[in-house]
Figure 1: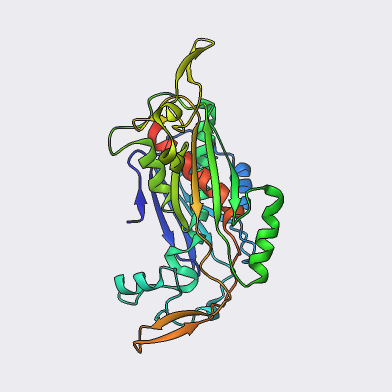
Figure 2: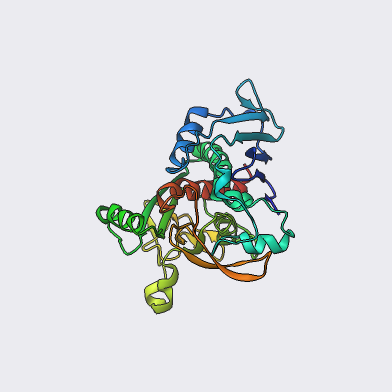
Length: 322
């Protein structure tokens, strides 16, 4: 399915090297003035390094005289820098891409160019929607930020560029981890069981191509902790209930507890690499090799930060029903 949400519905469309990509956002309240300069700024944070797309969008509906008008907001981005020659066939799947699974599911009719509908390019409409969500949340005091925790084996910012250069020089790619934080969150957002805050954020996070793990608060470190170490004890601070630590990442029982929401996402290395790899020829039913052509970034992390912030904002907007 390409539609997400109940209070705020997102419908996404397009392929990486098709005519256009875009999104329809339903459920926005009428009368909200969108700051499109801020939208532009957020969209620029996601621009690819290897593909020359400006991601200039066109508003098709939902905005009148600069304000949301209560109808679905539809946006479209024309693809202007496509390299069709790099994708001559869809029956030789690229390792760790969706090519093979999509070929079987859709009977070979899928558009595989640049990953088609499975491409990271489809995150551009998510950033558009997320930038609007951030603006709607701002009057409530909610702010969202992110940082790169690690790239490859480097967990210091001063070492990130070296990791990128090493992968690039080897014709390879590299993964990493991002942390996202949302502050000034009201207590009690979320619904047990299936509408938990973790469920909501994770459902969108795992929709982002390349995301392979999501962890909240202390995440995987809980496995080696005792309860006495993991528990977040409550205290009063200036009349407000807070926790001394935030191992739970601001969420208890699937509901927000008023502390910052903190979660991390792990991105796998981009599977399009210059090195020769083993694959299969589905048409002739034989083993073969592939050398992937086209233009590909060496790491998604620098562009992925704004995407993860966007899915966080959209999840919170859905939970708040704004």
